Image 1: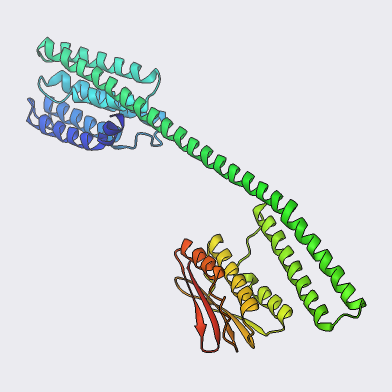
Image 2: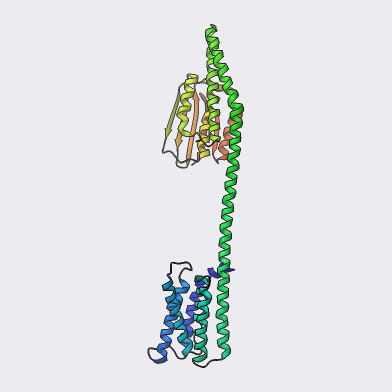
Length: 377
C-alpha cells in the first residue's frame, strides 16, 4: 500500500495543483493585480510554485535544508494568505502539500513540528480571517493531520519493504555463496580422491612400463615389442598428465580450451607418426568456459578414436570461428574406420554438444571418418 501511494504521488500532485488553479480562479475575491485580488494572486503563485517544487521533486532528491525551509515557508505564506481572505478558496490545500512533503522528506521529529506549526497558522487564519463555519476549519485541519499520518505510514512501509528486499538479496547472495562453497568442497574432495587413487595408480603404471621398456631394450627383445611398450609408456604418461590436469581444474585451475588444440595435434603426431594439421580460420569468438572445454574434449576424444580405430595417412583438425559460434572439424584421411568408430565415445561427444545447445555429427567419408562439432558463442 505504501509503495502504491508513493507511486501515485506525482500524478496526484499534478491533479491537486490543477484543482488549486481551478478553485482559486473561481473564488471570491478572484485573482487580480490590486487590492485583495492581488493577495489572492500572490497566494496562489506561492502555493503553486512551492507546492509544485515539494510534490514533484524526487522524494530523495538532493534538496538542502535551506531550500526545503524556504519552500515550506513559501507554501505556508501562500496558504495562510488564501485562508485569510477567501472563505471557500484553496488555501487549506497548502496544508495537505506541507503534510505530504513533511511525511516524505522530514523523518523523525522534524515532520511533526512542521505540521503542528503550520496547522496552528492555518487555524489562526481560518478563525481570525474572513468568516467561515467553525466545523469547516476543524475538518480541514483534521484532514491535514490525517494526510500527514498516511504519508508517514507510506514512508515507513516503503522503508520496511526496501529493507526486506535488501535482506532478501543478502540472503540470496549468502545462499549462492554457500552453494559455491559446497560445490568447491565437493570438487576438492573429488580432486583428493582422484589424486590418491587414480593418479597414484597411473604413476605406478608409468614406472612399471618404463621398467618394462628398459628390460625389453637391454634383454634384446624384438624391436616391435620395445616399440609397443614405448607407445604404452607414452600413452600412460599422457593419461597421467590429463589426470593431473583434471585434478588442477577441480582445484580451481584453468580449463583447457581451443588454444590447446595445436598441442593436442602435435602430441598425436608424435605418438603415432601420422601427420596432423591444425588450422584456425575467422575471428575467434568469445566462448563460455564449458563451451571451450567441450571443444577441447571433443577434439581429444576424436583423435583418440582415430588412434584406436583407423590407420589414416593424415589427420586434419580445423577450427572455424563463425558469427554465431565455433565449429570444430576432426577428420582422418587415407583409410576407412573400423566398426567401433561409432561407439560410446561418439555418444559422449554428442551429449556434451547438446548440453550447450550445440550439435555434433559424425560419420564415414569417402576416405576416412569425420567428426564435426558446432557450439554457440
